Image 1 (cartoon, helix red, strand yellow):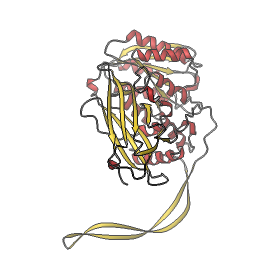
Image 2 (spheres, helix red, strand yellow):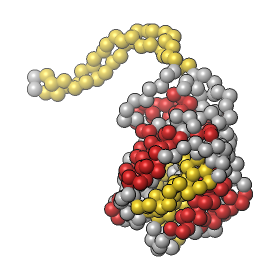
Image 3 (cartoon, helix red, strand yellow):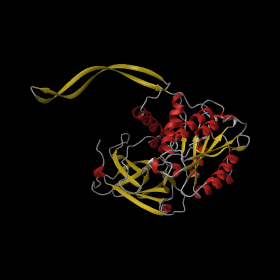
Image 4 (cartoon, one colour):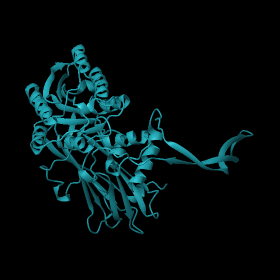
Length: 457
């Protein structure tokens, strides 16, 4: 699937899946109006009996085209990880990747679309488009994960030998009342670039909502960074909401950007207030306009290993550093999301920073094993920057993905079946491997799928 194809797909999903329709200012051009006869078979009751009747009607259909402008020439920073090619199973029948629950790429796209522009191709990470939407997976009846496998014909394949396979993982849910208390250190960018309405003002609105929805026994601290970093608020119990809300309201712009110092100070603060059994997490809120050296990157990895995760939330556009925000979350064992409205902040914080705060799986990765007798070739849609060497699937020293309670992950494969393949024979086996923080043990789980289980239309 080309990225343009995914873009059209996501626009369709946006219209179908959003509870309230988005307002998109894009020019619609009616190029042609034609009359079409539409037939429909309906069931009618005649003389007390149900009969099927064909009803025809004449309707006018307008051919509506959408006109998008080219992406603006801005200072936004995106990294193009390319597209995964089709791989013949006779050469490599294993596909391995780290799990990922980021969604920032989708919201970045939406921000461009709402301005009547196409998103830059480098900004498109297919898995984040797919994982933005709730797939409605059933939770596990026991254990940590439930694996969901489905196959269906690929509507854009060159012939009927191409299928889409959906690999879905659903983590178990933890009631809010049962999760451990959390220590959250908000790391807030107050540099000059954050002055725009969709940056620091939106950050303040977002944090106000989050504080209102945390537990009284959680604690929140705030570190700000501009010219220098400082502790804006020492960790304070959420029951003292008045103090927290006042501190959020007092956040103000302060010069240039020193994110390295801000993160270092926030990690030190988290270490001082950390306690056994507590969830410890840094929450970075920024437009990403900064540079981070190798020393800080190494420090983030070490703190993640020590149990202090880093989640990142991006704000603003036109001089926005998507690459930095996504990679910091990756290194920090957290998740990355992009916030363009207060409604998105509500959605993100509800799904990533309240009930899902508890990590239920560390270094989680998937390996899909294709049967060359049934599948001739495959390609994974997305996860290009989450690829793991096949040989490292059982290497638990390799960093992979972290999953929170109630999170779901979806991966889509496009596959080509072997002509006259036995529909009873397995097409693939999905292997899941992760560390369970609850018992400190590595767990393995698997599920399989045969062509006979594929949907036919």
